[in-house]
Length: 121
Length: 107
Image 1 (cartoon, helix red, strand yellow):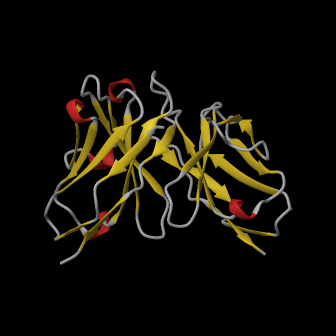
Image 2 (image 1 turned 180 degrees about the vertical axis):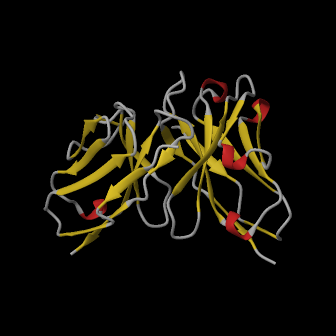
Image 3 (image 1 turned 60 degrees about the horizontal axis):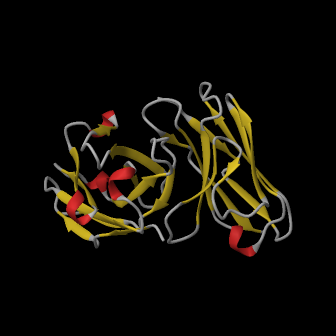
């Protein structure tokens, strides 16, 4: 079955960077775009961007432009998100979520289990 | 940016009752709206996409309706596992945005 397994929790200091991974299995990794969504503690969901694992092309929400980079390694079916210049309000659970369809229709299914990133001095 | 407003913020109901959740968009999103369920401590799960299409494996008690700016998620008869937070999401315009969520709690 389709499965997305994310890396473990991280604790970072303000100003540092964090890189979270998302390993895909059960489908052709290069066939579906991968999205990243975050959720601050007790808050709602916020879309950050997507990567096309086939081309490496990306689209980022303007809010994160200049601080976020999404990459992939097709040899190990893994997508990555790196966020730099971390602030306390970046504390959140970061989810990867596959696009529902190969043509890229921007619905999210399935989701990874989430990675908690805590930014604290 | 399209703002999605969900109401009510909290819905207190008993098992077996009908739940009606609302999502209103700040501008038309056509039928490009989805609903997700998030149980405590879990990742969200896609329930409905394109306003009214159930995702794979989603029970028939979940249904979606609406177009333009007003959308509804209906749960015909609440099961114990349906008590959760529900989010709507639009894909009509960039950036993709979510509503603030409706919590369905046990009365």
